[in-house]
Length: 186
Image (tube, helix red, strand yellow):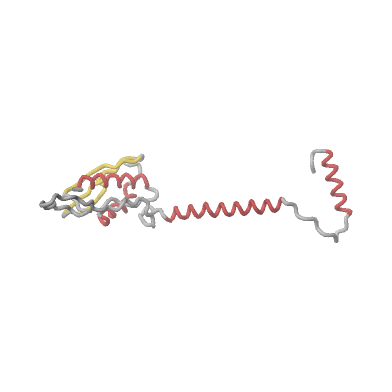
């Protein structure tokens, strides 16, 4: 019941009239409040679906801590050879193919907000033969980035994935490998 005495009296009269009316009559039309409520419920449903879809797509594109997943989150641009001009009557200097490196052992450090990771990359015969984490000063275990270590040898380049739950450590390791490979490139 309304608190205002005039409204309360009006509501009381309406209730009295509805009780006195015969029960077999047509029902009054539903108030428009229900239509607005259905519209609101529909908007909530559509919004929830949109949020869940976006969340699901992000989840599907992320690796778990074991490196398993569908994520390709950081793809470097393709390296294409740059054509060089050669003066007439001279022979061009031999060039190394893209992806070949100077032989040696290269070490570099990558940083993150959780600490530093040092990576060592070994190149033999112009190819990466091993990559490993040689020092780990992060507050999380470096075993979290082990899945990225084999990726360096497989792809003959720095890792292109990040590990979910170890994103900053993944970035630090990738940065260390990129610095080491920059030294190894001709």
